Length: 140
Picture 1 (spheres, rainbow, N blue to C red):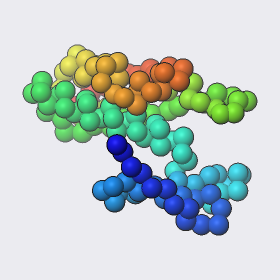
Picture 2: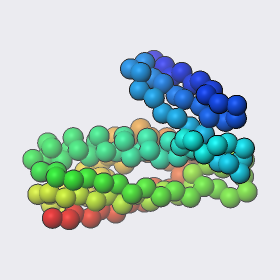
Picture 3: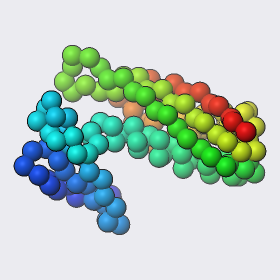
Picture 4: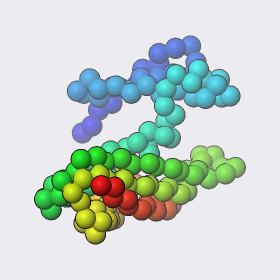
């Protein structure tokens, strides 16, 4: 079972999340909501989790395919539902950018396997009604 501790760290909406390995993440609300903008928005952490989950899968798959990754970057953009509470992620777009000795076909296959089969965060977002779109660019 996963265990995360969340501790309030200021007089408004800043919180620190800490896992059992003592890794931490600071979250806060926007100033327009009464926060101090001193951390990541909680909903943005879901997109970060999507990137981390997919990234682990993709690197593993490409290494098994003997592809040489010199650089790997993801640009994730998300759109939330308008005028709803809670406002869920409705659409996410990921641009995968690779550098190295990697074929476009293998990079695309690795991304598809991750997002369609292995990534639990992607599956969680889809179960909530989110559409995930993506494209791949190999830069050498």
